[in-house]
Amino acid sequence: MSDHEPLHSDIIRRVEESFAAQGLMRHLGVEIACIRHGEVTLRLPFRPELTQHHGFFHAGATSALADTAGGFAGYTQFPQGSTVLTTEFKLNLLAPARGDWLLAVGRVIKAGRTLTICQLDVHAHQGDARTHVATGLQTLICLPAGGPS
Image (cartoon, rainbow, N blue to C red; front, top):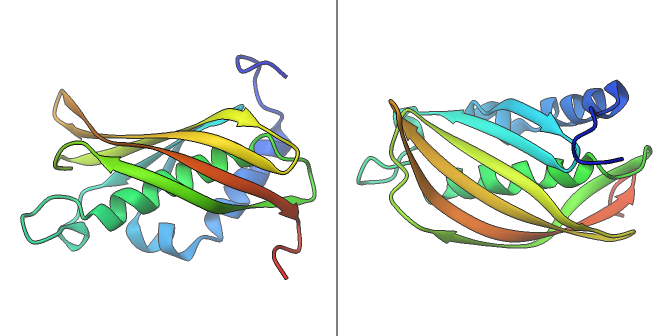
């Protein structure tokens, strides 16, 4: 499947169902903005509860958003009957994350049978302004649907 072909509805449904089961994403108020082959975009609206002591989005919220976007980007390429776990990720914080919302894009760079590598990018949006606030890399593992034992 090419990156430009539409995703099969079964893959979209599988991603949406798995995302809906994520308690932390629900708690933070994260929404799916876009699902493509090897790419998922998530949106996190600003709320004071998501800030650190200077009023910026907390790095924990930024990191969770980036990690989840990458995880689901990889999941779009995983076979039916599998699940995903992050085995490692590194995130560089580039600028204070302030704005009306954060947008995280996870993109598959290299998909393997077991391990998949993703690029993570987070931008803060305030009005018409967009600031790149974080970038990173992630390693995912493809597991049988039952998950880790």
